[in-house]
Length: 279
Image (cartoon, rainbow, N blue to C red; front, top):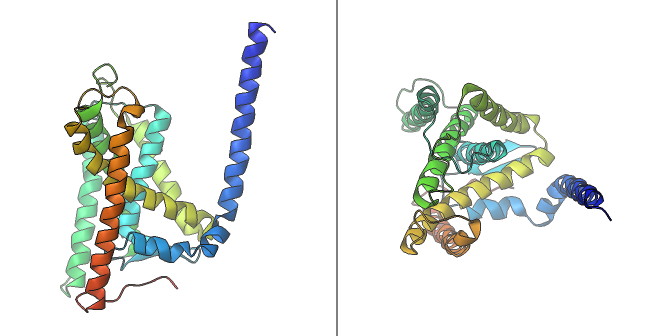
């Protein structure tokens, strides 16, 4: 067999694997609502992240109650979607700050969530608020904050861990308005997915938000572990981070369990109001 035929055969096999993988993924997504019901996943995920936020303003879409509150759901969905888009751009090794105009826009996203959060807090205290708090605004401002958070975390991780020859110091995660527009478009698809109000769309978003919050906790724990292990500025492959990441993940799971248990005890003793447990 000639070299050209071998290349064509390899491409054919790769294409076939991608097609089969895509079909399997679609089948799993279609069956996800039934799998989630069989596993009582709605309640399990609710208590898995019970200690993370108040869970008093949860999004409900397609009859599915998101385990995190609307704002936190937006934050972690925004973070995950933005990282996914940056991966498609090939920007996961970026090491330069975005242009000033883009950076100021991301800062505006952060300020917007801060204002909405403060307004909600004022209203909950029974004081005059600027406007009635709404879950859609909590979600939208959370999405914007999550997008800015993704850019910030990516730069911190890259500047802390990547070896100089792996760090793309002349490239920003989001370099122009077109790229920011694509990110905002991705966030818009999240809003559309929730607005569609179908369980088959809601469940992937639920899982993505839980992966996001667990991933951020893992990352926050992994960074100091990596520094102690002497990996700062030396990482060239993901394999080098395997053990710090595993340690961070296990500690994150333990922390989630401890926080959930602590909050449940406070609810049982009446120090906190009873939770809005999914039915």
